[in-house]
Image (cartoon, rainbow, N blue to C red; front, top):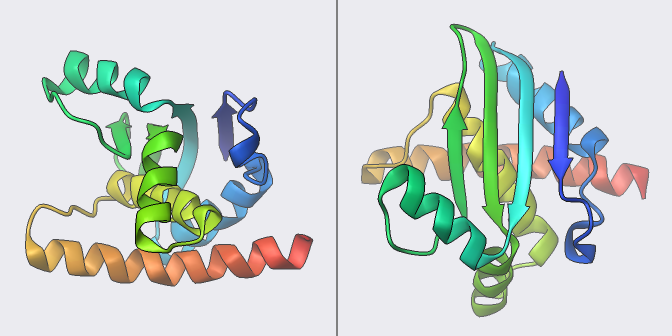
Length: 146
């Protein structure tokens, strides 16, 4: 599995390592019975992610994540474009630990690559349950290496 994180200059996400994502995505791949081959995780400001949202999705609003799926069959390949600003604001406004929300969004994007959606209320509920399950695993890993 190849994990690329860029840019790695934002100090707010210094805790997020390729090893942490490999461990987390490895568990997701094993349990969901898919091969996660390559995930590129790119971090953005609200403004730079808005440009991508307009250019590729014709959406004129801020968002936390945009996922591009290049998977072939059971071989998962994709890009996650994530706004650190959006996550920081959301976490602050909702009393959520910033690190937890960053991990949740990283998990959310890969769950989309695996095939989960969040368009309907039932899909959103299933997605949240999966996020919670895998977030717990990721936090256990993070705590074990710190």
